Image 1 (spheres, protein in one colour):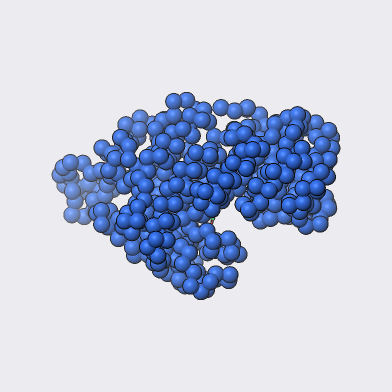
Image 2 (image 1 turned 60 degrees about the vertical axis):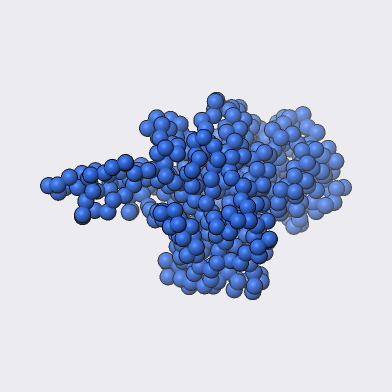
Length: 494
Ligand code: BG6
């Protein structure tokens, strides 16, 4: 699938003074450094006129207390280059610095360009990298790009054409950080390494699938970006569709990058396109109003947030019913939902199995529940399985019981964070957990059905109070089919 080892690499990080770099990338690099001692050097690139020392202080401030011992050796690998990305002349100095570090650290010309930038700069930077000769190197060249990859299918295609004039598809690593999460990676193993699940993972035994990503955070300082984007493009186009694809895909013929991606693509191609009529019926567009979070904190409504227009129709919540029109899934609704300022921070995939044809073991004491398999993605990482078993009564009563497995409940063993895994993968040359262009294009195609329908029908947002689980229409979406959203449970704390 990939090289087993991370190779010596120069990491050229654009957006080095930004929030993502500080919150996620430097701590992730530190972990990689501690665990693997991969020889790498980082050139932080941004507009601010910093020097190497100022930059090292900034990187230092991003590290947690834990493991500060060898930090100097780590920090000394960080260099800074102040650059206006539009000034193509200025890339020459960057090239000189990259060449110097190649020699000093013996990096063999391997270069990883990481664009933690606003997407409007992706095209300019890649073209300037080429024009300056930075991509002509003796070693490998790879490009990591953050989302959003385009604003719609057309702009994504244009961006892709530009990027592919510099980097081959196999050199492009499009980040979807959900693919770096332990339990998202685990979906394949849970499904395909367990005959008891795989044999019933289809429309004969599954009644519906529910995928939720709920957040308690509001939009905060990202309001400017968020108001142009909305939950559909921010979360559904990428994270939710990727989790849907992994939950629904066929087993890959081999555990190879392209075989896995091929299977995801087949699912994305089979999702029934949304029409104006189905959008009205099956898609809910929500926006939070002021409310109280479970922590007791009172928070303002979306339209009252700084930098959000008073009459904004941007959605902070989406729920939708999808159908995957293939042999395995015909007739099984996939309900997906995501929102900001909801009652809990939780990501879960719930598989609801069909009831037995006839059940004499009903009880007057205990509610009857279907079998549910819950994949807990976060905050708990694990699995729970709801079954029915005999109750302690002298009759044949049944009651629901839960089997649970938790991956991260002991505080001792924290697995690597998503960014650590993904950066590590990119240093090894493993692009399995990054999205291939055709996945991105099909995801855009799907969400564009919704944006077009919303535009054509002028769909207004449905309001929900902050601290709730979304607008009433989201519950009605399932109630119409005789279902309801399963409460988002914690492992061992139900
Ligand atoms: C990002 C979105 O991709 O994912 C954010 O842009 C969102 O709006 C975040 O908050 C959620 O990620 P996580 O890992 O906290 O679930």
